[in-house]
Length: 363
Image 1 (tube, rainbow, N blue to C red):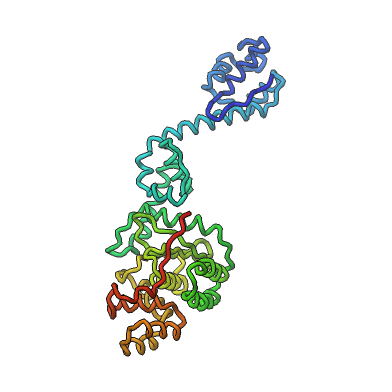
Image 2: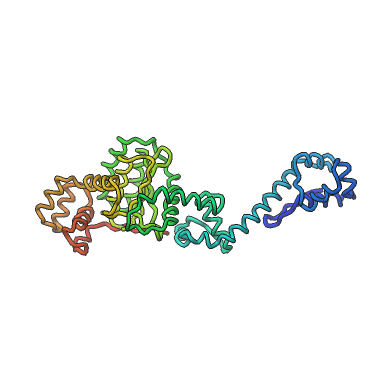
């Protein structure tokens, strides 16, 4: 007798197959039970699916029916798995509202999840994205992470914790595609010198060149668009023995991008491995680490003495900005952004055209 392939949506018990075997061989349950050294009640429970079929029983069935015991073990295993999957699907469908607390529309937009029309697909996709077994486990993970990160949030940061957790998880997904060397602080400082010169490069060359320079020093750099509810310009944390810098291009201009990058680089160089830094790119940070990172980025991009000389002259014209940009070896947009930040010129200045604007390619 052969066992036909059974579709993935159909759950068949070993007992159904056993009953077919008995019918084809004109064996009644009592006779078969006697030959197996079992009771007729036990055989009936196997057939009805109430009793599990273990390895010992599989061997006995194999001898009496001249079949491979492994067939019965596999039938039992597949049956129990299918039952468990059906029960799990019912739980996931019941948790549809739970899953929708996450930024589902953005997760679909950026292909972070692939879901069908069935509501339970959303819950399943969210759990798979976060590598969590069930909603309760994921809730515990999120709660622990939110407690860890809460003291790092500024008072004005109105981030949705679930959106933030999603964005951070996205960064960890992306980082797996980046091969890095062993982290070396001296090499990273040298890389920052090269990266600083990239501020004047074309937008198309910036991302790959910056990622490569960081990777050579053992730092993973990933770019992931902000999700609704994140309100973050960047984040820094250590994953294993390597730091991970994640940038969102939240404000889409080169002055914000480069200040955020060097701010995050400061966290890598100056602060502990255990901390997770979430930065929204405003002067409302709560602790000394954030202020120190701000100062590092500000002074690394433009040396204090050079800046003091430039602003003292007060000639904030296009020609002077471009000349100072050439002198410093940085993009003119960074200079314009700092002048605006320090309120030396208004934000709606005619110098805005000197800033380089970035847009995500979502095709």
